[in-house]
Image 1 (cartoon, protein in one colour):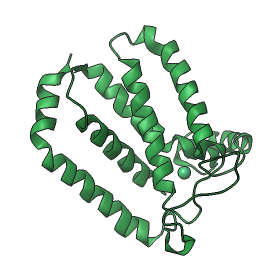
Image 2 (tube, rainbow, N blue to C red; image 1 turned 30 degrees about the horizontal axis):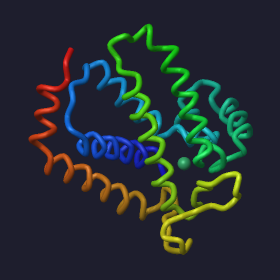
Image 3 (cartoon, rainbow, N blue to C red; image 1 turned 60 degrees about the horizontal axis):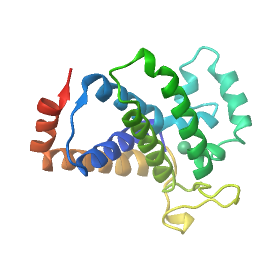
Length: 193
Ligand SMILES: [Zn+2]
């Protein structure tokens, strides 16, 4: 899937998870950091792709991208599996623990969850594509939905751009519209300075 689809899927998944729980107060710093972490999580698995937007935006990103891609076993390998999820989750936890002293108003455990939700949404979305996802590495089998490869989506082609993306936008708008009061209450009363 293209980065835009992943960005949208990540924030939609985060919204659903937040709405599924009783509202609780968080700081504005936590809200912003969690949103950023969620978006990073949403594209993180594609660092195994030298052409990923993540690398393209860095000056010598191409070189690094190739190197990291090779380390992770090439595209749609380690970073696209449950094992990779655990590894990235562990590294994210380390980084957040290390960064906590410089951002004391941020609830790092919520930020970590937001990152993980973004990552899981990425693997779920990629499962709808023809390539599938090697969820159970080291078992070298790529899973996809629907199981019949022919019925799955080709990344970046018409179906993704003109059906999946608009459908995702529709779902996001529907969720926001149907929970408008709750979201408004959350933004106005539960996000503190
Ligand atoms: Zn991917």
